[in-house]
Length: 414
Figure 1: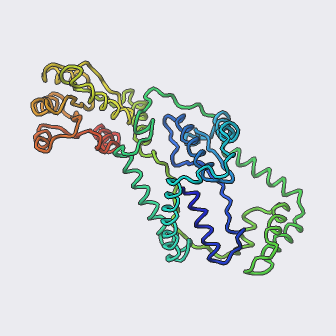
Figure 2: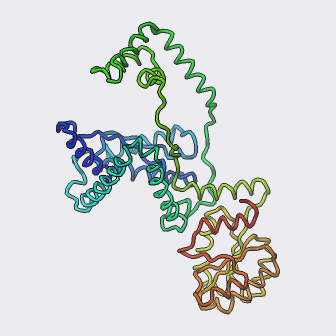
């Protein structure tokens, strides 16, 4: 829908400026997203890249680059680059997605969504125009603020797990091993490329290069009619981008704007888990979470499973058990475990009787241990639970990242 909207808006702009019909067509070269790539469970990126590539083809792009699935981890391996290439070949050769000219054509849903996106994009372009164009919008900070607002919204949805990143904030693989890396000396690569460029320029005629560079700015502020040919000739003669830029812009300083830094969707969760791993490597022991499971299996298992998955997002070690019959047994086991935090797991019906005495007992026998309750508390009981020593409540609407970070802070990691 976004790609279709881009075509619509482009066509409207060119038409408004009196452009010919042929000029209203736009060639789109697409990249799969680096924003959605994750460091942990990176093989899931193969699926993300495939769905993004599929969307691009259905959206009618003219060319495409599929990013290797391990790009977020570091320099990609030959095997990951091969998989990225084969995704395109599969879409084209096996799935025959190029057979229909417009695969999404006639879909009421896609066309309605395209219209909505185009209308929103047009309003945004009008706002940018009101800022003095893109240069003005960048220097005024308008673009940066808009992007920051969207980023904050995406992060907030991940924090509460309204949005789920498989392998990162949901269903983490706690036994995964880091991908193998091919170490490369970037400084050495840079030196080799610089030497190669110098060698290439030595074989060119400097006088000829200077003459061709002069043609680029031969008509002052107005570009020459055959500008693209002049530009190509200059590069063929060994001109660098810097030399071409100087000829076009002279020594004039351009507008300054706050840089827009590249960000990734899951970077905050990845930092959370990385801190745990670094702490474990340094001290020989990670953060340990004790499950204070109360009652028989059927009574505590649903919330014990939820709590385990919740804690493993940050790479915490979860200490499991088959449940305790009495508060005294649970308190003693929690103290003996040496855990950094304890999660009380049972049912809402049993909490009013269990939680106050259990939370108080854990706090008294294990000072400094955080106590968490699995499940959203009933409003009438929440204060009594907090007064008894419950520090956090974990449930489907809880801020997962913030709670996990609070546990790290209590342990002195953050």
